[in-house]
Length: 223
Image: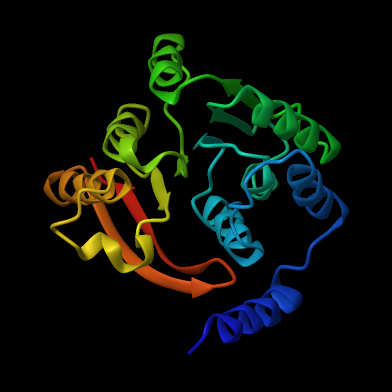
């Protein structure tokens, strides 16, 4: 299989099952125009997040890594209209401004709050405010800190909370025990932490598609 084939199949799936709309298309277009890196989740992956939030019956979502708000919109749309809430953490202030505009255009600014700053500073603030527990957590930020993000996801969760971590395959490099690349060592440390953590039941799988070759981890808090 080639990248062209993966992309063609992804487009087929997306056209039938996860078609875009004006708000989503404008989110991607405005993010690109603002110079944000084109690393948002693929449309069918956005739809997967939407479905996972809905299937979990989530009323509260925590996202670590907002970028332009594309994945944020997909997840927020699955929240109930009567009291659903979402907090998304973004390190880059310029990215956060783009995301807030995109979220507002999608009509979700009343239930989504984008906080700016290092997530490892914002997460303790959320805990101090009593913001948790969250029903669903999506982690898609700097990979070096993935172990710390998972630890904080646990602290801000409850039994039944679903935790999803993106980009865990690293093009296959995650299996390289000799790698010294920070994103690889951070991701491997996260896997090792989860494998030892009795409060988490998890699996991970490799993915191919318009975003290339990578992987996704899905975990459930069991205690």
